[in-house]
Length: 204
Image (cartoon, rainbow, N blue to C red; front, side, top):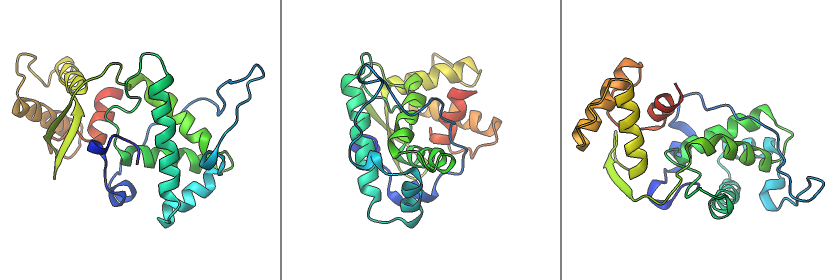
């Protein structure tokens, strides 16, 4: 799917596990390539957004091809974009899938490439800038793996909002701080740094 193997989610969760509103993407479809602003789009990037939405809703065999194409695109961003280690930071496969679906539903005649490009632009502010180890932490129902730099950002933001003591660095301290934040924002108070929690934490 989209993220590193250690951060993958099952397709069933991609399709049914996320009830939050996905971020709105901005910008147009094309990134200038030649002197006239044209570029060649390959493979599933040429498919219409409406076809992607149909495949996602039907859970058909083309879904792997769409996500494989998107994964390759994001990997190319990591390789060629200066100052980016991973364009996808905390966002799970589920977040990516539902966000692409929302954009494509609003832009049915655009190519799938346009949705992935717009998503990439929206992800860039949260991109992991330098290599950071993945750390396994407890989730709501299973373990999660986040970059250590991301966990540092979570602690810093929670401290800014008054939910975390900066001197407390243990996992239990972080879980308690997340739980307090979730309760204060009307989210399920699981203590897990899941997509809805991190979206609200970093975007408010």
